[in-house]
Length: 361
View 1 (cartoon, rainbow, N blue to C red):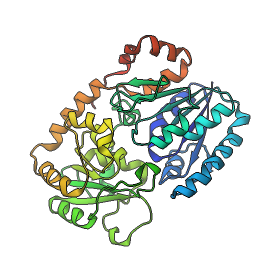
View 2: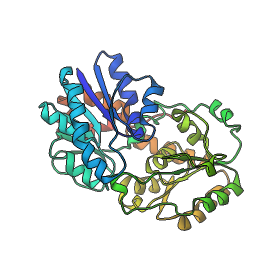
View 3: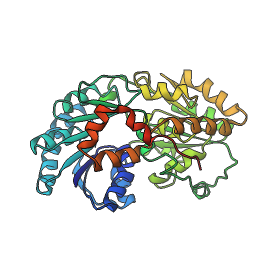
View 4: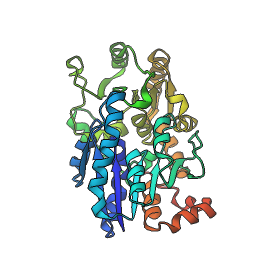
């Protein structure tokens, strides 16, 4: 089978990477297209994936409007000679558009409820939309639900084993308390009118009383944060999240990643309350979300002071893993058996339970 996989965000690289490797090993042909967003290109290069770079949408609404048809056209030119059997994307507008132009089927995975403008731009053109069961929006007859999270495509214990050696790269041992904070650029179209942490300096200084603080931030480097910046390659962040005592930040994907790894996460964003994934992770006792840091800090300090914090979170993670799908197994099965897999899911949605469970290593 010939498959086009499109990525437009660092999280999409992680989401598809194990599926790409497994399908490629089985003889399927993969054509990977990518636009520039934060560290997405660095990640693709770091993993050694061959890909076609399409450019950037930019950060302003005007640039996005101008570049949307341009990147559609670039993707069309890049894949038309490949003659694909199937398009895959995560909230990918251009994958939906180009697949329709080529009269090929397209599957979109979506987990962001407040990306309403993206939904409007791709829903009419896509064939199938897969969302977590916690997803709060209804997108019509094309929508299918699965009991899992995108993050379990690359952080499920069947796919991810933490490497304690990464701690040594930043001068830590596995006995030390440390927090990871993340600030985002708020340049995505669905971020307009939203906010997160306003007083970053006060937040970092408060957390620093309870251990070292490391920062991950989008956008240009700020010299004021140089002493806090993580000095490891991007693909190693998940190992550090696994061993961290706390994650606190504006990045929703990173919050979910920390939670499914068994590290308590606090997501600070006015968008969080609209997303079912955070409500679901909150039920497991692995995450909380707040509109600003004034509300978030007391919870962060409570977490950092909690005895046996990591042991408790690991136990909660174990319950979560048993309840949710191994997303890589599901993705590979869905693609290899397409289009029959769609009919099976339509007739017997409970069949997806065969992808649940896992053993914590």
